[in-house]
Length: 267
Image (cartoon, rainbow, N blue to C red; front, side, top):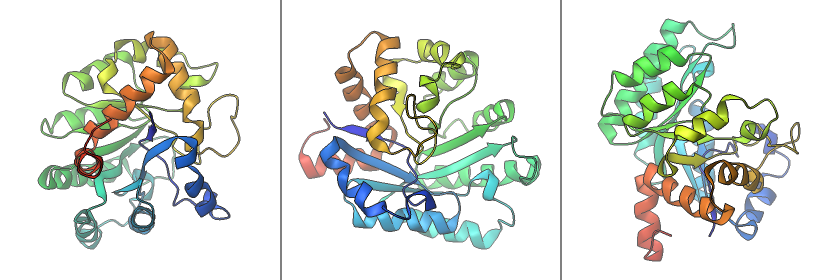
């Protein structure tokens, strides 16, 4: 069963020296699908260019809260146009980031976040949510849009927040930090998350799992995350690989439909 990395930034400058070498090696390493989310218009276009070159790569397009300064009608119009491409499967990476003090104001981040959720709903696309040190506002905003669907990327909220999202059909993304010794909330969040709502991510080139922490990450390291989740949920790594593959296809229906059309199956 192949692995589905639902969040990896191969458009990042961190892969400038060997991007094609890394991407070309992924299928032989068991990586069957990758979603590359943009963080602003330039990186969204770069992610889409990679999706056009590699059959197993798909793009999400969006404006990250740390990169949303100056976003106006022209940017929203360009984003809408990008969403029309057949290999764009979500709006993201979008959300709120209150960690960095030089980010745009909380109010402006919230406005940009809401506009992109509304675009996703209109176009019937899932969203990929970035939530850093903004749990209360992130949850409040998505609860204002009951028709929105998607994933909280690298979920770092409480088990109680997880349960609120899960009740409304959201997926939760688990990344390298769940393998760190100081991962205290992650086991509790995993405990309340049903198997059919878990997706796995690398956030490459960031967030390398233990024992590779501090090194550049890529999708071939996803097995460390899968093994940790399998241990917590009492299933085999092979079963967790299958489950998260199928969950990824449900999270991104365009990929699920395309994969079924191409292969005649969803597994």
